[in-house]
Length: 163
Image (cartoon, rainbow, N blue to C red; front, side, top):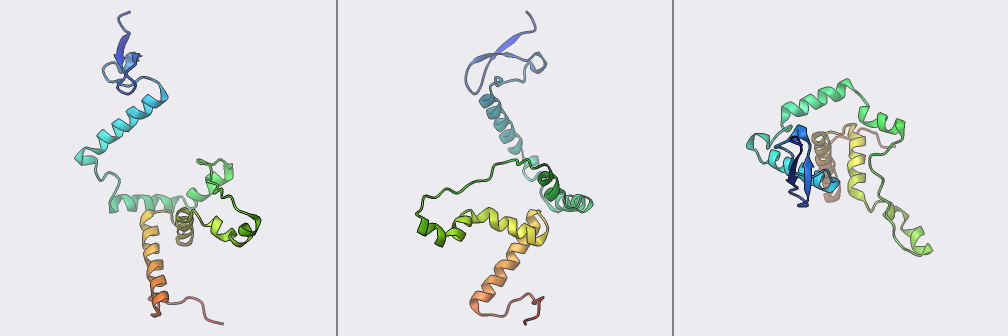
């Protein structure tokens, strides 16, 4: 048959039949590992171009995302919870301890994965999932914590009155 072309996969080295619609372009066989390797190679090649180095970064793209999120309030919070389908299973920290240790370390076990917990807390407090907003809120919280630990007056005014 004239339409069937065979090629050698750049990932595994096996000979495969090229899809006729992709003659001359298909370099990887249809195996999942080879397809993943091909996608990774294409992304590296695309990101290697100078015009793509800062793609989707900069103030105009941040403003575009802010505008979209203002028009779609609560989108990132509600739609996944309503369906109950997780994109990724939660990591369960499994630590082998005795019964005495578990009662005294319950909070510490819960906070072992503190990076995602802190980012989630800051996103919840700032009511935004934008990295720029989280970063500015984090800087403010860091400054406040440093001021408290050093005994200085906090820069931010207190919003609640002391009892």
